[in-house]
Image (cartoon, rainbow, N blue to C red):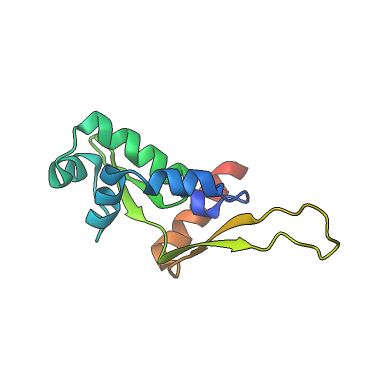
Amino acid sequence: MVRDPSRDPEPPSVDEVLDALADDAARRIVAALTEPKTASELSEECDIPLSTTYRKLEKLTDASLLSESTDIRRDGQHTTRYSVSFDAVTVSVDDGGDGDGDADRREFDVEFSRPERTRDERLADLWSELREET
């Protein structure tokens, strides 16, 4: 099972991204994700209570900053791992003007630079699509 909001057709709002990154604990989680890790591993490494870690992971995933994948085990003890789903996040401000002199407002925009999809990630995407069709 894969949950990768970065592949959602509707991108997150600027508010969602900035709100997620404004939190110190969430930034520590992102910094600790040099490789995919479980919530328990992140909780211990970042010295954050597990319940708080889960809330931060949910917020970061909803903001398209993290993706999650589930390792399926035969013993039924499935493991969810989290990984960073961006190389860079850019917040920009456009002039909001159309040149007609009306009261224009500046608009904020957020853009993500995403890493190249691995072969395993592409295969997981195909498998998920196949399962949805059957």
